[in-house]
Length: 500
Figure 1 (cartoon, one colour):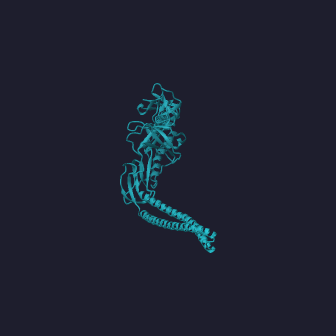
Figure 2 (cartoon, rainbow, N blue to C red):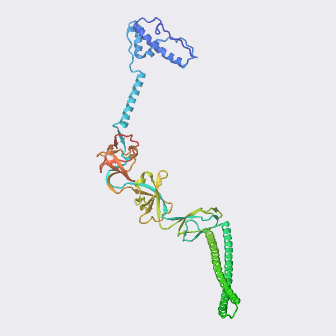
C-alpha cells in the first residue's frame, strides 16, 4: 500500500530556511505545482490510499521539474540571494501545445483536400479508361419502346369434353399432327348408354303402336267403304223398283200401300248412305289426325334417339380441324365432367406474338403500328399490331402482332420474342447514346469535353424522346461535340473532370 504525505502549504519546499526573495518565492510556487500534479493524479487513481505528507524534495528533483533553464537559474538562486531575485522564463512550445498544433495542421490539410475534390467549383482527376466518351450526332431517330411477348398460333381450337365420362383410350400424344376427324381419345358413360337403350325401346314401342293404329284405321275404312258399296247397290235397286212402282201406281196396277213401302225403303237407303258418308268423312279426319300425332311422336323418338347417339359419339373426342395437338391433359381411368378442357389444337396457318405493354402507352398504341424484333437466329423480322386489348391488368395491357413477310423458321409456340415497338415516324434529330449518366443527372446535365479532350465540364441539356439506343437532345448540345455517357456515381457531381 502506497503512502504519501500532504504537500505542505507553508514554508519553502526547496530549502528549510524559507523564501527570502520574490524570485525565490516564484520558484517555490512552481515547485509546489510540480509536486502537486502527480499526487492529485495518484489520488484520483487510488482513492482508498491513505493520504500522508509527501517527502521533502531535493534540489535535483526541483531541477528536473523546472527544466534545464530553470535548473541553472535555480541553482544560482539557491547559491546566493542575488540569483533568487531574477524572474524565471517559461517555455512556449510545451508538449501539449505541440500536440494541438500538429492536430490543427492535419485538420486544415484534410479540409483543403476535401475542398479540392468535393466542393462547389470542384475538380476531380480521373482515368480516361474509366469513362465512355460518345460523340453527339445528327441522325435518323424513331421513338420506340421495348416489348416482350410469347409466340402463339394465329388460330386454335380448344378440346373440351361435351359429355362427362371415364377416359378409356388415348389414341395420340402431344405434338401429333392431326387431320380433321382423327380420334384423340374415347370416354365411356354408362348412364348415357342406358338412356339410349330406354329411348330406343320407347321408340320401337311407339312405332308398333302407330302401325297397329294404321292397320285398324285401314280396316275401318275398308269396312265403311264396303258398307257404302252395299248401300249404293241397294239404292240403285230400290230406285228401279220405285220408278216401276210409280208407273204402276199411276195406272192403279199396285196398291197405295205397296207403292209407299217401296218409296220409304228407297228414301231410307238414301238417308242411310248420306249419313254413312258423313260419318266416314268425320272418322277419316279424326283417324288421320291420330295417325299424324302418332307419326310425330315417332319422329320425336327418332330425333331423341339420334341425339343420344350423337351424345354417345361425342364420347370420342376428335380433331375439329387439321392442326397440331399442342396440349393434351388426360390420363386413362380419369373421370371428367362435361366441359372439361382436354387440350388445344393449333392450326398450321401461321403464328403471332402476344406482348404486354405498360399502361402509360395505351393511348398511343393502335392496330397497324409496326415493330421490329431483336435478332432471332441472327435475323430481324418486321411485325404489325393486329389487335389491342383494352383491359389493363396489373398496370399492363396486351397486344397481338403478326409477322410481316413470313414468320421465323422453326419458331415454336410459347417461345419468347423481344422487339422494339415504333411510337413515331423516323425524323432527323440530335442524339446521344444511352448510358449510365442518366441515373445520376436525370437528363438535366452532362459532362461535355473541351476541345483539348483532357477536361470535361458540366453542361446543362434537355432531353426529349428515346429509343433502345439513343436519347433525343433538344437543347444544350451540338453535333460533333463529345460527352461522357458512362455512370457518374463516383464523380460526386464535380464541376470539372480532368482526364489523365
